[in-house]
Length: 109
Image (cartoon, rainbow, N blue to C red; front, side):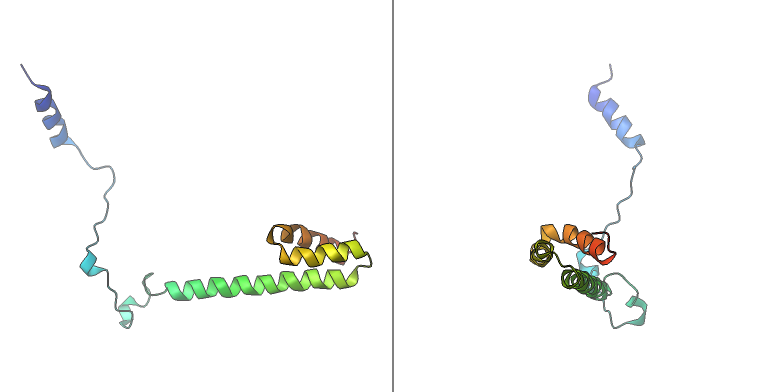
């Protein structure tokens, strides 16, 4: 009479892996980024990617602040001016302030 462990052993011997997970040895993770063949590897270019992202975010932020300030100068309504200035300092109001600023600039408000 076959035992349950024999059946499991037979099934395990016929099993195929679903996903092959690459094994990275810890002693092989050090990259020498000064070598030309390693210049394009993701491990060597991460600082440039982060710098580009931060630089782009700063440029977009400056443009958004300039739009809000221009709209605050252009409007004659004191309540909208106060709201636009406050929305620059409170991050959760910034999208609403930007939309209102664009509406003021296009003379929709």
